[in-house]
Length: 326
Image 1 (cartoon, one colour):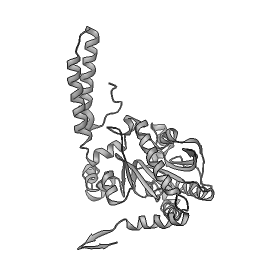
Image 2 (spheres, rainbow, N blue to C red):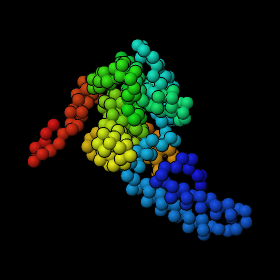
Image 3 (cartoon, one colour):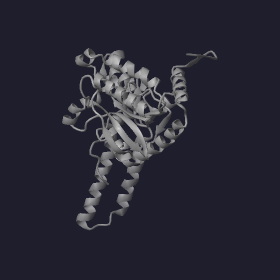
């Protein structure tokens, strides 16, 4: 069994069992001993530990999996599922934002427009990608690609994976909130099918800036929230160390989002997270995309816009004493 290359805190008991199994294998080889009984016993303990850990994940543990450095990012899914991806650069106003990428591609023979938030794998790439936090020019580039897709009748597929839009002084100076707000308005009126997939983190308006779509899909160990757990903890408890408590309060799990109607489908992941078997995660995404794209392409532009409007009007409804209020 291959050792994990990056182990989260709650996975350490599993790592110890894996080391014990490797040790028995090594002992068997060095001394030419038949230790199959001991091997099977350890393997059963590993299987039980996996069930105990991964079937009872807390919201905070799911956030940690969503941030796993080996988790497949947007461009990994693009490489596995799409053909002929051609990246388009720049917002035609300021510069090219590498935290938000996009371009044309083919999905199952259909031309589509991809818009994606992209993180980096190491320090150098994270600096290049600004840790997946787009600046105003990123959202304006996304708007340019949305309008291009609408002009040519291309379905739009967006990949959400950001802790939030970049909050720096230069970002505020170039009006990041206005750039996001314009995208919310224009995506709401887009006359082509659109699908968003939350593949990792979905934080605040930075995620929503490319998330006002006909359908929203989310991987089961991803999160989609108005604020990050650390940000919530800093505001409510004045201590970022209270992030696990904040994650619990924010109900950061995909199943809750589906129950509230915030997302339309939860995509299954391999045991322990998508990083353990990216191909399996990609296969689940492909199946869902085919299904939802087929449904949406059957609708007229007018029906798409009206249905999308109704979808977002339903969010935030609640019931009090038998009366539904909005």
